[in-house]
Length: 232
Image 1: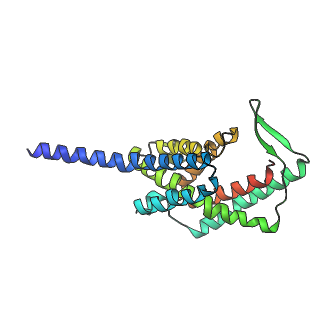
Image 2 (image 1 turned 135 degrees about the vertical axis):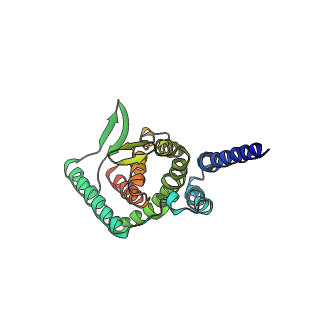
Image 3 (image 1 turned 60 degrees about the vertical axis):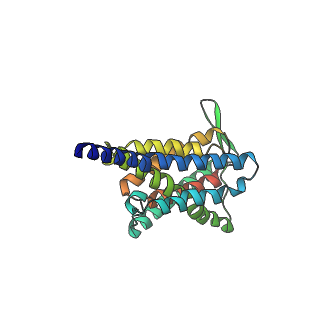
């Protein structure tokens, strides 16, 4: 009788763990994907930001109380250094592109047009986009994908692999695929599929620093950089 009770309790614990750490994050992601797809279909894409804030920021914060899982460890000195480093690299890259690209250039991959590069110097008023990208895009997306999803999947699958001193698990790759897919409703252009690769990089940063803040900084600066080197 005692063995049966212990077995039932163990089964319940396994189911609860599977639900909380695997099924629930993916269910919320699927809800976000369905919502974004619907908004695009009915021509209300301007509401996508509000949906993202609710599902990517508010819901994970209410469901997960562990700062370690969410990657909310912050080291101000580290974050400032990372901000200065990424800003310097992106600024140097922008200057080199600006000096070398005098007219729009199509970047292709396997004969498929990926992006049109034509750097333009941003006006001072456009610097507001850096703040918008950080608070309105990078933080919610990093909290949900690299924090909530990757953190809970790490707890479920563990981190069985290691490369260059960074431990990671299946959660790193799964969140990268989910991150790429959730960007497809906006437009099915080839560059959307390449979002997988920065997602992997963001995930590695989350594992290396046990924090989403370095990846959020890189995410925001990356979006800002791409905005001013591309031409529609």
